[in-house]
Image 1 (cartoon, rainbow, N blue to C red):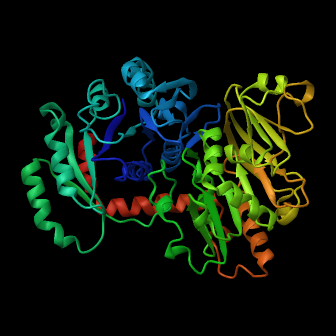
Image 2 (image 1 turned 45 degrees about the horizontal axis):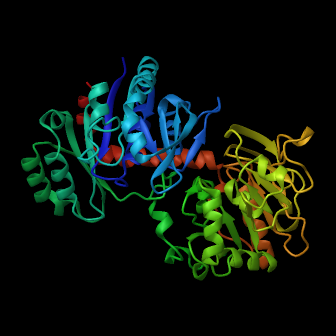
Image 3 (image 1 turned 180 degrees about the vertical axis):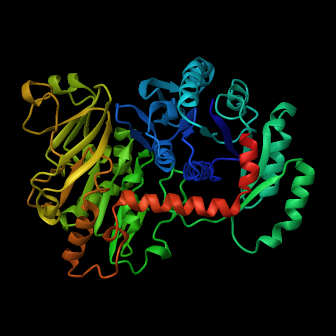
Length: 511
């Protein structure tokens, strides 16, 4: 049976996902068959496996680091928030419906068989399983029926490392407070503490670490520096999303503004642009922040209609329409593309009855409309971009790979919903505007469309061409593909963790 170790944290955002990925990489480098595991993830960044199952994007990233194939067993339960009090619940890669937080909390022990069955399969196939917890194990109001932190550690009999974030301050209170709120049995499982995101001279922490170990009764197994490692983030707590118009983006040749929806999903689609020295990425929430970018991206959304309404209410819709008329490139991905169309209908009955109830006005920049109410689409995509026009005409003929995750079907305006050969909806990789007033508007259902085949590079060069400038400084994609770039980041992460963690002690925990 596989050995296992569990990474828990004092709160969300302390670095559990990255440390899990780094340990996966280290163990894989050391010759072990390794798999990540997260019993329950709550995130809007998701991934489609080869067999059409949806899992958290973080688990797919960790699987890449481990060198194993992404599968539903790595993340048997995924919660995708679609309101402030509810989520779509995905079990073993398939959506089973929407639940309020209270309903899910009352039913979550029903999902333990799926968790244990998934874990057993991984135990049979791998040598080591690196388990990631969620939030904090000391949420005393949620400890009953816990299936993701100490409750899971007990179910699978795993030793635990607890991670605290010193960058936000209060790391000693975080760690000691967490230990204090655990039961005696739970504390027995904690074999080490980890201080993450440290900046400065490590010797300044010597006395604090000594007191921490004395009071906590648990050794500190590592002091990890603040890492400049570019890997995909789990959810909207990502630090990069809070930086709007930061100094890091100043003096960049190309300015890309991403609309930060309330239910933004799969913003990892934009990660590749961060590898270009001359490209600045900004996540914007209001018209005053958007400025005059070279490109505006409308990303995916878990609640397309509500986020569309907020575009109009905030004045952001008016700003996007104005930029489109001025020739700015507007690119919608998944829910963002749906918003760029003429209409969004709640279901087929709204289309057939021509009723205004259940019909929502899109931005009208693409000659399409979307009908919701269909089963969720989950599939991998490998295709060639057809004829495009305007600024991004050079994308024509590019090979792209990625995946689709969306509810609803989208049709060209001249087509009727669900009839004859058009029943499946759009088939092209990219939909283009047909308006002479706004020629540079594009949409796609493909997540990851920019990642391979030099597509991102073609976009950057096209945007630079409009401004009459050259992208002079080298970018990482000139040297390697995005996939290869990520591999170098996994290795970099592993190198930092090897130097920062007591790996002998961690291997001892496994034994």
